[in-house]
Length: 124
Image (cartoon, rainbow, N blue to C red; front, side, top):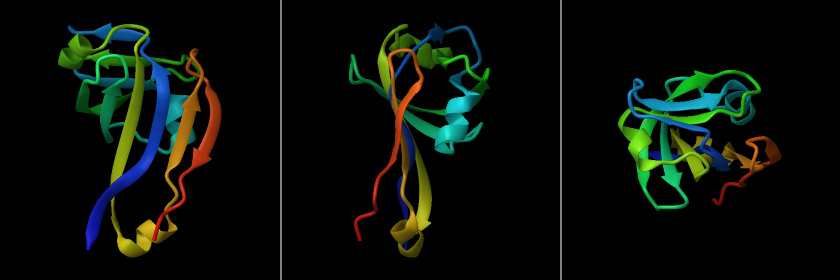
């Protein structure tokens, strides 16, 4: 059986921009993508911790070291600069892959720097 499970997460990042007239997606600092294993064009879920809104979109690459977390297109109407967000990336895995997989989680500072990187242990 193949299941959709958490691959990685950026926890409590701050929105740095919201651009409704820009082509849709979420722009994420390249350093953050590298740190958690997300990739450009990956499908992600984004939760707004202020409003409870959740959306699905795909990733654009932001400038390295910029701390950018920007919502673009229609998604920009659901977020404001300064909102805390949780960005979740999922992957399809077999039970055997899941048993070995430890999702990488980045706990963020208010300035969108990694405060702590950790891994969730699988529960088999």
